[in-house]
Length: 339
Image 1 (cartoon, rainbow, N blue to C red):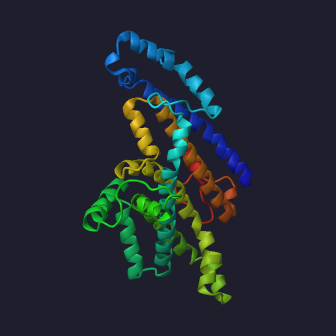
Image 2 (image 1 turned 45 degrees about the vertical axis):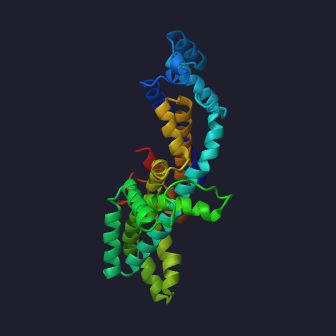
Image 3 (image 1 turned 180 degrees about the horizontal axis):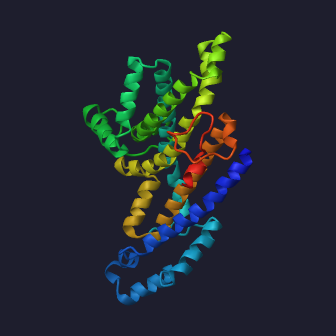
């Protein structure tokens, strides 16, 4: 199956996911006990004033009509206006998106580099102390939730060794060094679980690959260990690690939203949290939908990487988990997202 068909299939699955997410989020925000009109009007919140403001906001219309109106506007790129600030939601998202993407992107880079390095080292030094250390570290890190790691990093670098900021955000254009310092701790906190998963999957796949005829034949031809690793073994064994990465990408993006609250970073997470506390429905809907779109796009990118490195995955794949996936047959991320 070609990459274009995989992309079309992924987009076909994305549309129902987006509608379902929007519907669930809309219903949850509609049935909350919070009344935005009471907060907006304050002491002037008489029944008549509340009814008039709800009419202006469109909250007195049937839920289906409200949802249909929001969908029609969202399709045209209009996510509405915040009930409390009067600022278009898309403008606020545009301002805050770089924060969330910076954290998630750096966490992804750290996870790939750390996980791939550890997995390769453990496979090449199989049954050595390095292999045992990587296995132990990966098993331990996989059990630590990111928020626990975040608290530990704050205590370490905010109290014991206070040379990194534990809160606030510096834009990249203002100071690249300050930008990196402001996001490095939350990125590390998010990356460790993903790095552990990648390391375990890659180590297992590489050990299996080095026992196959592909690698044995390369050794008999006198190829160098580096050439065998990077030209033969690694491309063949990377499928399960990429499958694990496909699962971890949504977790990294979702975790970035939580990390923003812990480290006081003005990203989409803090925006969604403040909107939920106030009952600002357009803000909550906009933040959730943009996050889901980013997750779906990231998943499609992982699919294309799997297809590029493993042509056998272009046939219709079986529904397997990353732990069950083999280097010759890997389940793309969009297939897993429909499970």
